[in-house]
Image 1: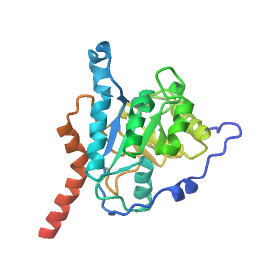
Image 2: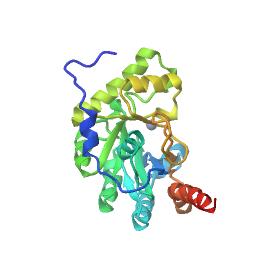
Image 3: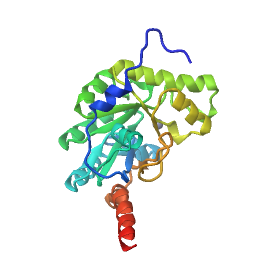
Length: 267
Ligand SMILES: [Zn+2]
C-alpha cells in the first residue's frame, strides 16, 4: 500500500505520553457509548424511523451527560481505553466513553456545547468524503473541538461495507482516511470504527496492517481487559433510548465488576 507523497506518520509514542494517567482498576469494565446525531428534529425527520433512531434530542443528551457527571462517572476518550488495553493500565471503576459516528455537523452545533458545559470528552469517527460537506463537520469545527477534549478516529473514506471490498479498495478506505485526519490534525489516528459494524477476519488483518491499534464494532457490552483490540464492543444509544435504559447501559460495567467482586469475596 503506497503512502501519500511526502507523508510521514506522526509517532504513536508521543500521543501515549500525552495521555492522562487514570487512577483506577486493572480489571475495568467500560461501556463505550455510540451516538450519531444530536439535534432537534423537524416534523418530516421525526416521521422517518431511521432518522429518529439515529438522532438523540439535545434535551435528552444533556440529561444523559448530567446523569454521568452527577453520579461521578469519568468520561474517557477511546484513546484512554486504547492505552489501558494495550499497556495493561488502569481505568476508573466508574467510567464510560462517548463516541459519535459519521461526523455530523450537529455534533459541533448541539453536542459540543453540552460536552463543554459538563467538561466531558468525546471521540468522533470521521468519514473522509463527508468532511466539509453541508451536513457534516468542517475542518474548522474539527480543529476547534480538538483542544477542548474531542478526539478523532477514522470511519473510512466512503463508509462502505468493508467486507465486500477487494484488498486494494479495502486498503484505500483504511489508509487514506487515517492519513487524511492525521495530516489535518498533525497527530496519530489509531482508532477505527467499522461502518455499520461490518468486519471479518480479513478486514481486521488489513486494519492492523494499516496501523490501527483499536477498532470498534456497533454493538456489545462494556470493554474488558483482554478483549481483542481490533474487535471492540460499543453500546448503542438510540433516539428513543429512555433515561431508564440509558442508566442500565452506563451502569452495566460497574455492576458487572461488582457482581464478580462480590462473588469472589463470597468464595
Ligand atoms: Zn457510520
